[in-house]
Length: 114
Length: 110
Picture 1 (cartoon, chains in turn red, cyan):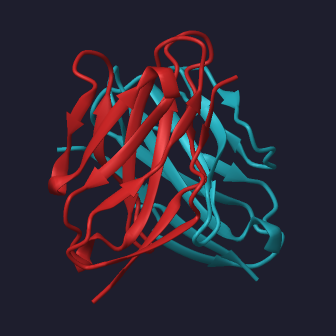
Picture 2 (cartoon, rainbow over the protein chains, first blue to last red):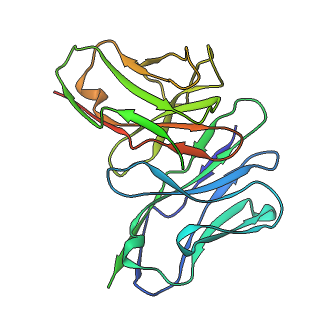
């Protein structure tokens, strides 16, 4: 069965600093990978996605992520964070073979300090 | 622009009441999902659907039920609400790409 691991429950960074949020997945074939962001009390907004092709994908709000098959990882990065980036971030994987489930990691809460 | 709607946004209801949370999408997506999420916590898949007349249970056991009679509509029903059902419920749909989420329903059972 597919699974997603986000090892960091909570990360605190200073405004203007760089950011990397980790995501590891477990899946036999090439997965479809996503990063979503959730503000308090809201639904989830897609930041970026990877289906195939270039392993470095660009998303909205200046985010990017790199798919590394050898490490089963899909880490999210941003070179310079803004106070408005404070939110919960979820990595997700979808399998298009079999059960059609969309599985999420446990999330990483990002706090920005001035 | 994604069009997926959940109603109500907030619901406070007494124990033992029957409730239905509505989810509708106008994108013609075949696949739809219900997730349960406690504040600041992970999302747990409780139901999903491949299309009309298909429903499957998710990873987290839930006392709720769902139906998929029309492509655009995927309601979730609790026959007898209990305080343990207090949570946020998120609905999503997807075609062949990413999933789109509604704003969620925050349910409180008193």
